[in-house]
Image (tube, rainbow, N blue to C red; front, side, top):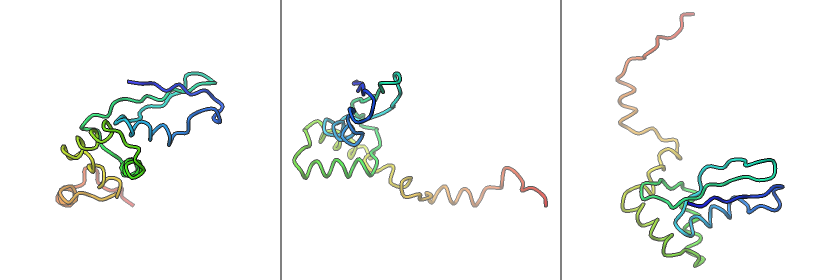
Length: 119
């Protein structure tokens, strides 16, 4: 686990996209960000687990880094582990705002839990 301590004002901090790319580069993931005090913020960065979903944006970042020859073996291993377990694209339906067919079917068959208000 790593914690990035960023001093404020912002011009002296590492930009968020660079933090994310560095994490992906090594097969890690960024997580919770908090303020430490008026001058510093904290960004939790941890090794990515095989069951960690990949956002489409992070997949695009990883592909771009791979094309530029910047990805490490550890980064590739995290990608391959997610692919093998099906977690690499598990968030696609959510990001595309698609309703899964089984949920839609269940919703159509279920009665409303709350009756609509009378006029």
